[in-house]
Length: 305
Image (cartoon, rainbow, N blue to C red; front, side, top):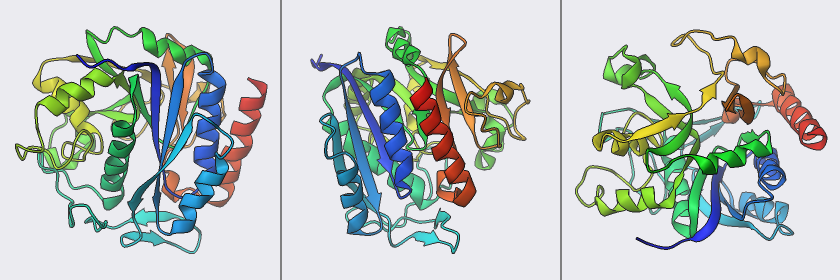
């Protein structure tokens, strides 16, 4: 078994809207300060200037490593209000072109998710700590109790996910069964040895996956983390979560959001009934007042808590 440095490698992919990554990193630095960690920020971009902006954001932060990600310029659409969308079919230099259909279950995923998966792989491969935490850039930690994630029994529960999406979310599989869904990776926490185990299976070499360890070949981005676990009858830990939509019952947990952001895309996750994680959601489509609201409320929260 490989030996790794103690602590956590945080991996987050940035694409535009740099206040998201600024606040996400600030929450890690505040609530994980007692744990050795490195933060890998992989910058997907449409022009070179975006990489320089992020480098300058963290030029005085020793444990933040900013890395060049994937050029998304050829498939990016930005409307007059600043909302970002991605076309179907990838077109990134140096990567497979035209990818949209997942190899495992035939899912049809927009280019942005594939770019996110490939950029996530850059960060995962760069790190060398015992634990890996992949998080979306439009998220923050809410409390130092989040460090209790390290106490998960990883011999039994191979990873921790922020949320479960039931089978009827994924129209391509034509299933309304809860268990046919997916463990979402807006927060995906595991031991690095889990990635080593997947690498040993040579899924890419055997033409089962497009890329490794992350891809969009099963359900959506990061779904093969769960697929590998299911193939081996492993268990995983899904956090208590407030997300609500037409595919699941409304638990009312959104009323307990500590940031008082309660639109349908926002979600909060709890560990042992303590709120530890918040996801703004739909970051590419956020603009104007919703972005200002996020920045204002998160900055106030991080100052006062």
